[in-house]
Length: 340
Image (cartoon, rainbow, N blue to C red; front, side):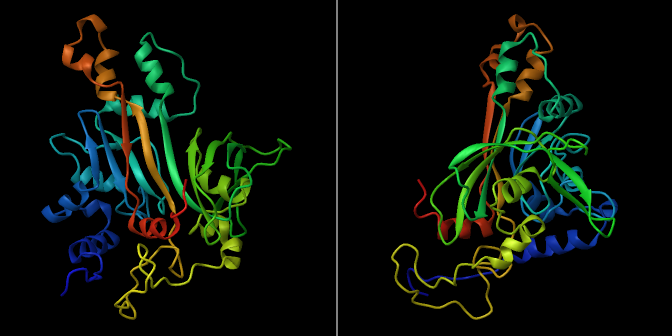
C-alpha cells in the first residue's frame, strides 16, 4: 500500500448479516442481539424524553403488516426502547424505497401531539404563542434527483391526488385527480426549488410538502412537473426507458485525471447511483424542523410562570439534517459540481 491508494470494500460483513436476518425472520420472532441493537441505534440522530429522530436507510419499510416483516416500527419496538417500557411509535411515514429523517414519539402524550401536528386538519391556536409560532414554523425538506428539469426554477404545485386500481384489481396507484370533481380526491400541495442547472440530463431539486399524501412527491415530480425522480420506476417507467444514463466514470473527480488503478471487474462501487444499470430511488428527507415537544409538553401543562428556568431556556424549535445514503452521495459527488 502506498499513500493515496484507493481500497474498495463492500458493505461490512456485520451489517450484511443483519440485513439478511431481517429479510428472513418475521417481526413476531425478532429478538435482536447486541450487535444488531448497536446497528439500529447508529441510525438514531437524536432522542430526548419525548421524541426520537432516525436517519432511515432506503429499502426498509416504515410500517409493517403482513406480509411485510421487520419494518422500522417493529425494529424500533424491539431495539430502541432504551429505558422506556415500550419502543417509540410512528407519527409520519416515508416510502419504503426513500430514505431520510424519520420522527417517532416516545410517550403517548408526544405521539398525540406529533400526530396532530402532522395531520392536515385545521389547527386552532392555543393560548401559548410560543407553541403556535413553533407549529407554524414546522416543515420537512427533501432532496431529489430528477430526470430533466422543471420549466420554472421554483414554484408551488397544487395538484389534488386520487387512487386507482390497475387491471389486476390488486395494485394501487396514485395519480393526479381530474378537474371534473366526479372522483374522490385529496388536496396535495408541494413547494419546490431547483438547486442548479441540468447535468447529464438530470437536476437536483428541493421539495417541501405542505400536505402529506401517499406518494405525493413522486407523483408531483413525475406528472405535475414532468420530471420523474431517478429510480422511481412506478411513476417514471417510460421516461427511464428513454433516459441515457451517465457513462462509467474512471477519472478522479478532483483532478480530472484517469484513475491510476482501475476498479476490479465485477465490483459495483456505484451500486444504486446514476452510474448503476438500475438506480435506486433518489429521494431523501434531508431536513426536519419541528417544535421542541419535550419543552412544550411541560409548557402546555402548567402556567408559564411556574416553569423551571432550565425548561424556559430550552429552544422552541429543533432542527435536524440527515446525511444522504451512499447511492445518493455518489450521484451527488458526480453531478453537483455546478450547483449554485
